[in-house]
Each structure stands twice: as C-alpha cells, then as structure tokens.
Length: 255
Length: 314
View 1 (tube, rainbow over the protein chains, first blue to last red):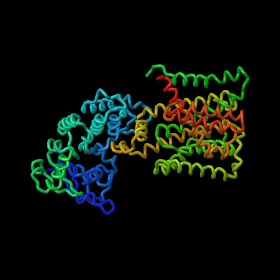
View 2: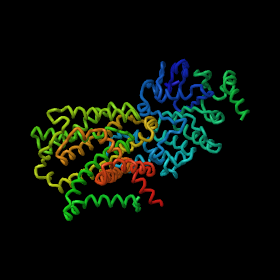
View 3: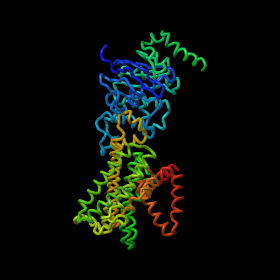
View 4: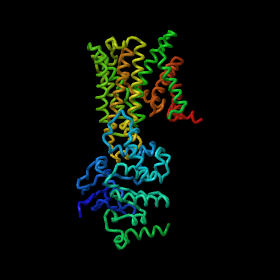
C-alpha cells in the first residue's frame, strides 16, 4: 500500500491516572472513509483533538501526507489540509452563514493581513462560500445570521465551513449528533457525496450510518483500538460484539 | 442598507452639529463651547480607538488612558527639549504609543477575560507612576507645554477654530480607517476571534497575531488623541493616565454602543456634556451621573445606538 494520508502511531494521552488514548495506531488511505466508533468515554474525542492539534499527546506520532504534525498548532495543520467539524456546534453565531464559510475560505486564500479592501466584496471568497453552502444545500440561507438557524442547519454549516478550506482530510466529530431522522438521512446522503471528493475520518454514534458509509471501521474501547477492518469484519468480530455492539443493543432495547 | 433609520438620522445630526459648531460659537461669541467640544472630539477619538479592540475585537483593555499620556508626554517632552515641530512630535507620539502597545499587548494577550483587564490596568498604572517619577519633566505636577505643535503654517494650533477642525478631521479620519479595517479581511478575522476563538483557530487563523496587530493599531490611534490633548490643554500630567480616565473611556464606549462605528463618539458627547452640566448644578454630580449610566446600560443593551436601533422597530 502507498503511504497513507494520515498515519497515527502508538499515540498515548493520559489525564491524571486515566489513559484516554492507549497506544492507538491507525491509518487512513487517500480516498477512504474511516469511521471510529466506540462506547461513551472510549476516548474518541480525545483522539480527534490530538489529530486536530487541540491536545498534545504524551507520546506517539501523527503524520499527514508523510509529514510529522504531532506537535503542530491547530492552525498550521489546517493549512496542510486538515479540516474538522465539532461535536458541539462551534460557529460564529453573530455572523451570517456566508460569512462563516467565507472566513474558512479566506484562511486558505493568501494573507489576511489586509486592512483596507472590503473582504465581503471579494468575489473569490464569496463564490467559494456560496459553492460550499450550495454543496450542503443551504445556499438559500446564506445571508441569515447563524444564531437564527436551526440546529440541523448549523450542523450542515459546520460541514460547509470544513469544506470551504478545500481539505485533503475531513475530521467529522459526530456530524449526526442531535439530528432528527430526516436530517440524519440527509446528512448521510451528503457524506455519501462528499466521500467521493475527500478522505474522511468519521466519529459517530449512529451505527446504521457508520455501517452504510465506512470503508473501514476502527473500534475504540477504553482508549484502545480493539478491532479494525471493513464493516463486515467488524460486524462479525466477537470482541466488538461483546464490548460495544452488544451494549448498544441493550441500550436501544431500553429506549 | 440605504434605508432610513432613527440611529442614522441622529448620527447624521450629531456629525453635522460637530461640523457646524465653530460657526455657532463665532456667531454667539461663546468661546467656551468650542473649547469644551475640542476636548469632547479628542476624547471621542480616544474612545473610538478603544472601541476597535473592545467592541470589535472583544479585548477589554482597562489601560487605554496610558496612550493619552504617552502621546501627550511625547509632545510635551519634545517641546521642552526645543523640538517644536509637529511633523516630528506627532510621528514620535504615534511611534511611542505603537511600541508601548506592542510590548503590553504581547504580554497581556497571553491572558484572557478578567486577567486581561487586570494586566492592562496594571501596565497603565505602571506608566502612570513612571510619569510621576519623571522629575525633569515635572513629575507629579505635570509638564506645561509652552508652545503648541508647530506645523509651519499648514495649520495653526493656537487658533481655536483651526485646532478644532484639525481634531475633528483626525476623528473622522480615524473613524473612516476603523470602518475600512472592520470590513477588511483583517477586521473579519478579529471579529471572528471575538465571536469564537476556537473555531477561528480550527479554520486556520493564529489568534494572537491578529489580536496583537489590532491592539497596536488601536493604541497608535489613541496616541494621536494624546498628542492632540496635550496641545488642547497646553499641559500634560500623569493624571491623564490614571485608571479612572481609562474607566471613563470604557464608559463612553459602552454608553454609546460597543462595536458600532459612531457609538463611541455619541458616548463621548453625552458623557462629557453630562459631566459638564451636572458638575455645574451640584458638587455631587457623580451621584446623578452614576445611576443615569446604570439605567442606560441596564435598559439600553447596546448603549445609545442600541436604544436608537430599537426605536426604529417601534
């Protein structure tokens, strides 16, 4: 296999006595949609935060396209083609949808130390923003303040923001969180489209969505990868059933 | 966007008033009002510069009066040393303010929230005590500026009307600059950082750099106000840097409307006029001023500009 787009090797992160990321190794090939699943508290968000640069690992390494990025700050990784969406929607609420997306485009289109020309009149940035909004089906909401958008719409804007930076790798932290059934379906459809263009690491609780979308799945339990493989292999894996799917099963029955 | 609003009408009225004021002063022979408004215009400039970091940038600097002192002392000290040319005094005042802002900003921006407020306050108080210790330049008693900055015939700062218009032109120029800055790429980044720093980092903006540059621009603008203020009073003393003056500037910004272009000007006009007339009524004018400000802040979220904005919607 060629050099993977993202390679994570022996990553370790502790919080006090708790090992949140325990020797995690995984890689994501170019064009792949790699899902990371695991029960609550398995350390999924901790792992993502180390990939995006919001947390530093205690040991191990992360490389993107062959380049070591383990200790690069978040904004530098972003310049290298890594984009993320947040588990809890994190947008500029007092800006319009188009402004939110245009800023992401701006971050990747030359210097932002320009003090005089009006940024909202820059056609290139506006076009990029509108294209990304169109991609997620929200072009008609471009000029609405994000604080006035619904939760589902904000989830889609998160995605548009990530897309506008034209990333090589998209890290999606629970894009389906808090969405209704129809909204979830639309999101799955959207991801189905996007995966043709960009490699994706998907952290998600919505099992049907994960199994429908993923090329490969890694299962994280107590900070460790207990299994990694294609959806069929994961479904058949006894450890996974015991550690995770079984538990999820129980939970769904209770609900 | 071109539609009529109450806020726009009031703003236009206020600006027209500021422009026409010297005519009124001349016609009525009321010289005092021109002197008063020169001070108001200068402090409005200072408030507008504070608004750039506070309103648009979300950086609550509680030490902005330091720049008034630095700009003022640059003029006063140079004048005392025999350098009377405004073409030297003003650039030095701006440069000194910029350098101070760069150092203070680089240190203060490591902190957030209350700590940022406290550290900017602490630095301004340090500047205050340093100025008090400048024995050669009057120390505690301050420094008299015997001759106003000399712009070799271009403008005569000793002529009340000319000086007023110079100050007003500086104010308008600074507001124009702020307007361009907040709508530029840079300005959107700074406002984005105010709104959600984590998000801005995640899309690829290193926060500190942008905030620091904004801090320096703001400080430099306020240094200009300081240089003008020293010329206005023919005097500069450590008192202009005292923390209560920084507080006054903050009140002007909040009163007028944070993050609006003309709010700080409105805030400065209202604040200083109130101060002037209430202090004529009673020695205890602060007892009236305090609750009044409280009411406006409590019920007029967004300050006067916010209030006017709501009038429009009925």
